[in-house]
Length: 244
Image (tube, rainbow, N blue to C red; front, side, top):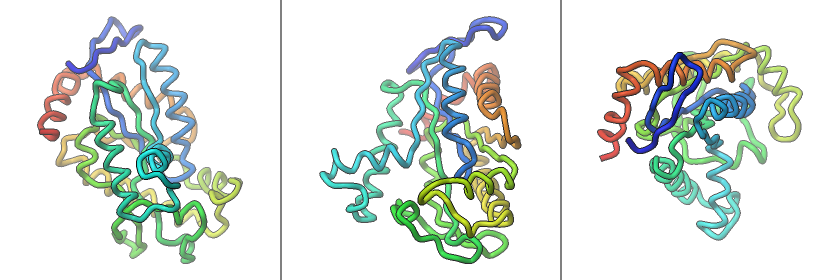
């Protein structure tokens, strides 16, 4: 095993190898708060989990690696920074237990109005995919990046809750054009796409349909995963298979 951790207070002590958990959800779905809260609970149970928000972390690579600010980099350079990040987190000896705050895609428009501000313009490489209703999305996740993940969780709060958060946000994260329908279709597209990604990889994909208590449920999903023999004994074999 590459890394070993202990889960206590679960009817015994479970020895598990290093673990990669990818948490997805659209903007303002509560990933950052939920992951940080889950990390504290898990760490108190004997695992030293680290939380990495993918986009901010990769943006911070620009200065030390390329010698310039992220907003001055080309799209090819942004892609390079993301690949460097993915290689770093693939090394499980450095960070054995990791929860990633991931993004799958962003809509091209809210309410028919193209997105354009200092937040959405600082984009990573993407490709356009069309949803069932004809809406277009900028997909930034490559399927092969999920090869190093053991468990995928999607936060799916009520669209009205997300709408309220977006409308009450400050600066570039605020948007007055987005509608409940936009949010519903965005989530539907992400969930369907991620399910399509996970199935052929035999990745466990769990959607959490809740407005509160997501941190506890994230912990429950991780604990259940590690206590399932075919999962906790087999997922490292899958990781090595895809990393060769």
